[in-house]
Image (cartoon, rainbow, N blue to C red; front, side):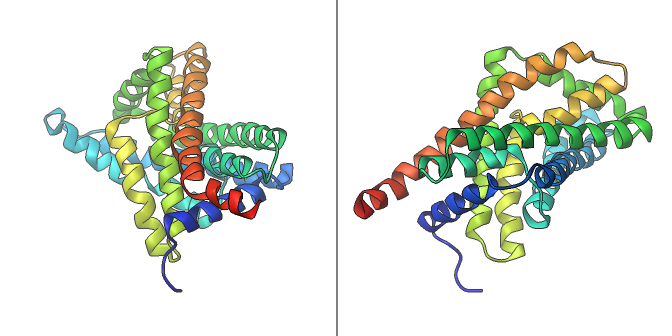
Amino acid sequence: MGMDYSPKEIAQVAIEKGTEKVKMSITTMFFLGFLGGSFIAIGYLACIRMIGTMPMEWGSFATFLGASVFPLGLILIALGGGELVTGNMMMVSIAYLAKKINLIQLLRNWFWITVFNLLGALFVAYFFGHFIGLTEGTFLEKTVHTAMGKVETSFWEAFVSGIGCNWLVAMAVWLSFGAKSFGGKIVAIWFPIMGFVLIGFQHVVANMFIIPAAIFAGELSWTTFLPNMIPVFLGNAVGAVVFVSMFYYISFKKEDNKVEA
């Protein structure tokens, strides 16, 4: 088993993983991307079921309890296998910075994984949320209130919130690379993901679940969906690419490359 990896070693692991990601066939991307979207949605569904009927007086303690089950989604993806565009924003971009892949490969990966994450999230929102009613009934108020909080933010607020979110989500993935055991990976993922949910940052794939859940219940319209997706996606990209990939690449890898050259 050995020691866990240092941050400098994690950077190398991330570059290797990002380089592998772009080689996936469209079929593989479909299945793993669908799983990624589904798992994040299931984590969010657990969160809604946790906080949905808690008394108002509990205030932010209720938020804490909901946030504490949300990491289920990324744990399933990272340990079980799944592709999540927000994690790939970090891995594939650091591979790009290391000149292991080109821009077309990066964009192709991000595009298809986003599409397939959306399918997975919609599947959970429709069949589990709406069809069997897990985000409706006594839980509808919390579902709608949560979705409204996402779609009512301005473009720039959603964008900046997206940066904060994926700075933490990309760090969760980054830390998980540092651990060699399942237990270590779970702990590494848990706190950054719990943190982003607790703070209230916006995650593009999580929003692909919660906003449609409110739409399927007839409480929101599809016209609110894309105006939220775009700024949150862009913010998530900046959070991962700039604050994780770029900062760590410059800190740990740039010097190495000069030495090699």
